[in-house]
Length: 239
Image (tube, rainbow, N blue to C red; front, top):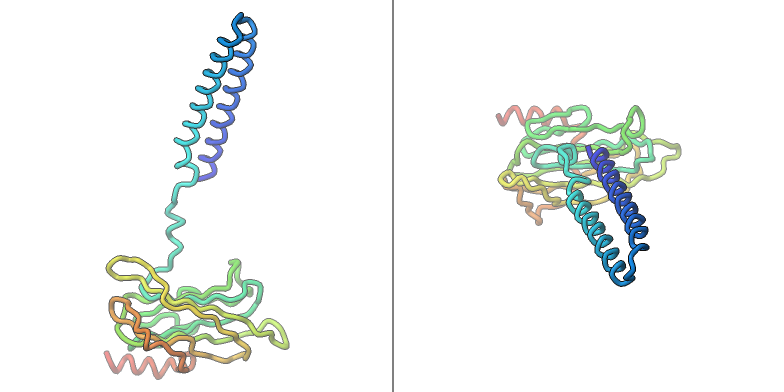
C-alpha cells in the first residue's frame, strides 16, 4: 500500500517541477520584450515565488500519506500476558529449546507445547527446515497467575564438532491486563557450552496485575524438560 502512494507523490513532484521550468522559460522569454528591466525582474520573481510556494505546499500536504501505519505492522506483538522470548545467533544451525512453567501449571516446551496457562508459540530448530531469517522461540500465557514463574534453556543440538559455545538471549515481558500496555521486566544473556544441558535462567514472582517481586528473582535450577509427567500429575491433583 505504501509504494503506490509514494510513486504518486514522486509523480506529483515531477509534474510541479515541470510546471516551474515551463513558467521559467515562458516568463524569461516574455520579459525580454519589457522595456523596464526592474519591472520585468519583479514580475519574474513573483511568478517563481508563487510556483515554489505551490510546490512546497503540495509536498507538505502529501507527506502524511507517504508511509501510513498499517495493521500488519501492529500485529507483530505476540499474544498473551506473560511473554518469554529466546534469541540466538541467526547464522548458527543450533537448536536451543525454551522451557517455561507458570504457577500450578505443567512445564511447556517443544514436547509439550501447551499447559493450563502457557503455550509455546514457536519451536525453532535452528536453520534446519526453517525458512525464517531468525533463530527465535516464544511462549506466552493466557492471563497472569499469582506466583512463581520459571524459564529454562536447553541446548538440544550442536552445529559443529567440537562445539563452539553460543550466546542465547532471554527476554521476559508482561502485558498489563487492564491497559494492554507491554513492558519488559527481565533480560539476560547466557553462554551455552554443553550439549544436552538444561539451565534455569529466571525464577520470579508476579501478582495478578503483572507486578514483579524483584526480591524473588533468582536462577536456582529447576528441571522442566524431564519433569513433565510429575508436574502434570501435580496439576491434576490440585484441580
